[in-house]
Image (cartoon, rainbow, N blue to C red):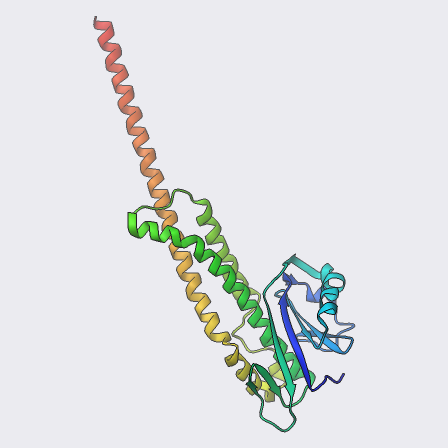
Length: 262
């Protein structure tokens, strides 16, 4: 199909995972990523829960999510992260990003797939960043308390939740969406590697991924340290309880002996 010279591309996270294989390729316009036609536009699906709409009206986008994709979603997400970019097709000109618009040499399907892949990865990273930042907000009071009062937290529930969030994010980043790896499509279209590197740099995929890895490591270490202090504090408290019980038992024994002797 032929796209207009100017159009919008919107990526949005709608679930933790989209069952792309279950969706099937019978009606697919292209694969890797899977793309199907929708009116005058295209829709690209990514297994890590992101859908990218190319030249599809906003109202039509929501209808597609609610009716076409709902049966293929695992852990749906409402009001997930999203990103919208404008695309201009300028034949004969260099491909670049200018004034927040992506300039393409043509609107061939492989080029559109590369753009969709980069936008989908950017949306996914935005979701990870939001989750990690929320976890940092939870762990910061524990770290401040440790620094000022040299005491660990009083409860381990939030700490365990924070560690769990970090582990889930790390698992997703490694196992479901290797955002720093080159798309499989480049194996067949080596000529598009320059476009991919251009967009990868523009959306800062490498830098954002590295920053997330550092934050995950710091988050995990802080939470684990606080949790260890909590366990140590509880163990010490139990030991004091035991000592007190022993002292009480000795006092009762002595009191009993004293009564008997009198």
